[in-house]
Length: 445
Image (tube, rainbow, N blue to C red; front, side, top):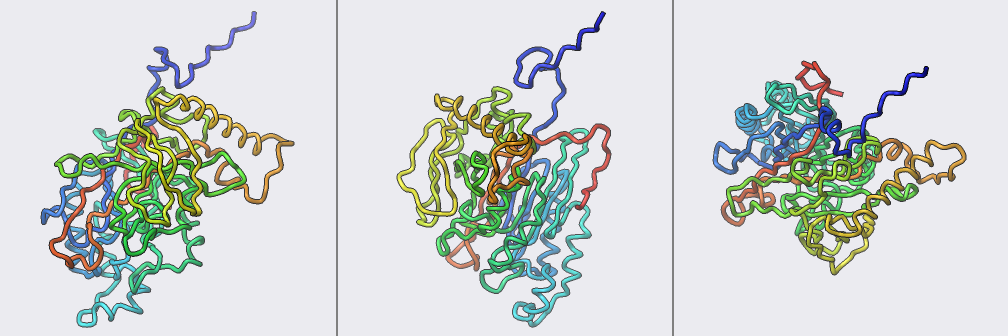
């Protein structure tokens, strides 16, 4: 007599009691994001630093990278580090002594009376017990505290930005593609000083001041979070839904939602909750599409009440995308030519188009799988990006955060009293660390 096969587990979207008893594979993790503090700190009352699991500083710690500036900055970060399990720091263009090659050539222009020693300045950061300093490199972070989320993620950090004046860590356009190719394809979080082109990069003087090569690399990698700074006026959050439906056309965007900071003028935290628990999960599971989008898989509403479809400015060289995840969709009245090619979509939970959007995404995923995995499928063009798309269709969306604290541009004392933004707090779901893992030190890649 044949033994019947064991019953299969219900799909993750099932509401059965068996499914509800499955152990979670992800857990909400809180990131507190800052950038461009330029010698300001919570110690002098410039801003308050909320508690979280991970603190990220996206560069421009100082004004000119002197040893005394760096010591004061690391001192307050080390104090703040007590409230965080991990602290990630990169440099920016103003932290000139941390770019030894630049400082050897141009250092006397800044510090002709008291030249600094770059190795001593760098040691201030690398000798910190709380800081993981990333200089165009990646690390695996495991949060292991019993009372913490006990999650893990791969993070890449880089201080570089396009050349603009005589500052450190600058690169010319022809170097950009090779530079950003160093971002690992499996990075969960990318921290760069520069923003990507057309996202959180609005400057009154320079228009869209971000890097197009970085934007293209983000399309290929599609991390959960991309944290930046540099362009102070670009402070904010944008969630970019990447267009993966046309496998022979790269670098397209389907939709961009713009964050509305409801904490402005109040004492509330500037919070962006992209976790399942918050009801607005990011459409990024870090890998293959088999698990499905988190929100649609669990039945959690994909309603972005704190986002709008309209751009925060009317710069003529910035793209304005078509629809939003807000419950009240406002159609943009202007569209501009740009390398970004948004396609109309409806992601509002109250819209009858949601089911059609979900099913079409599923079909697109299956189509791409057939192109890759089934012999005799359609012939791919030379533009098809196999590495970026194969078994990575769960990476649909990236949340881009410009976390600039200083509101004004350099020099910061012009035009009166200095003004500051709040840190931006972001909650996302990350995979749990391996059971029994006790490795808490970052593993550099």
